[in-house]
Image: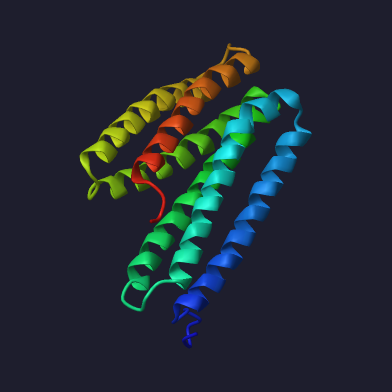
Length: 198
């Protein structure tokens, strides 16, 4: 380690990523407990999101293995890719947490606040992915266009939700939940188009 605490070898980076993976696994488990405690309907709606998080965490584990087994010439590039992947995953957890906060809102006022935070979490996630797409191939850029379309549809629903005065809370949640599900799928398709670490 350097004086600033930055790992200086592949193995030390591997240990640091192991710690991060443990922390992220705990965050997923905390989210799952909260979803389970919310009842069967919420659990059913969040099943796909939780599955995506678990699969994403497994992808992160591949970076740890590759970095530990890489040559001195290769591990720096792998580390940059890993840092990006970990940052993406943190954003995925943030959006899932924001989605759940909105889902569990007990009244319209609380839902408006939660939906505003949810929209911001997704906006940040979209900007992150669009930045990555600038150096990506045509297939990945096409996925980003689809993601952009899904986000703008969701943004309209978020705006309606935060301004609504007469619509029932359950109807608001259901309507926004549909476009958020589309948004999650678009994010998943984008991530799949990049592929796992080789």
